[in-house]
Length: 406
Image 1 (tube, rainbow, N blue to C red):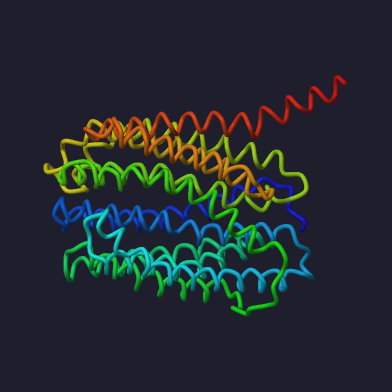
Image 2: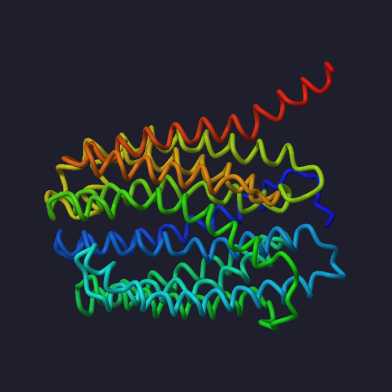
């Protein structure tokens, strides 16, 4: 596929606006929960949100598969690629719905929530799979205006339905049902805005393997970025877990806000000459993360006021740590997208090692306070970011120099 050579300032602005609107809607949903739910219920809601983000890796993986395959395919063959990707993603969504019933009871016990809340949360992820695969199709076509519109309406619908559910009956279980209704409604709207026919085509070799591979890599990343909330809910006193859930909102802002950079540059990363796009995506994410961490120190009092006021004042001095945590994992996410743009096969191992290290350290030792858990997450994330950067950008250059001198 031919990729325009101009630097996509306008496209970045369009997608940045759309993702910002979506993120604002998402954080309004979380802030509504912080305001209307008790700290104990909000801790449960925060854990369910973490579970939904971990589960949504399947939807995001479907988006990356669709985007890479469309971007790397000539226009004449694109319809067949789209229909084959939709075939696989429909099947994946159905399997996730079946799995949600099987894992609901053990997860409910772990999170101290009802099984209905767990089933509704996982089902809300399953319905997003179709919506995100459609987003991937128009992302791969570099139709950034349409991509931004579809992305925004999906996020707004999900947030609006969840907020409405919390207003009607303030509980974590009702909020999960609101996420399910909103996710289904938002996915339908996204398909209508994207104008991608939901036709299922014949099986194409390699699509299922790529979806599984991308899901595993992203699952490790999103597990790592949300497991801290789940562990805080399990290991800290219930009130402290509510504090951690508020801090995690800041981490989510810092994590998701730079995503527009990779969204716009991903088709270029999948092209025949991707080097500049890949470096630009990672460095721009790094700069934005530094800026957000600095700003978080200034706006911490305002954020606490929005979140619920005095009852969450105990977390104010630690909010910059959560911003740093989210920024580090945003950088890792940018590098993961770089690797997925070229059918990566190594990210899953690194993510699994990071998850294992974090769980072992927190479970065995660093779980006595909010700061202990978030600092452990930061240190694990830093180690992974340095290793990922070296593996993707330094080692290939060194191998090239060695080859040149031979």
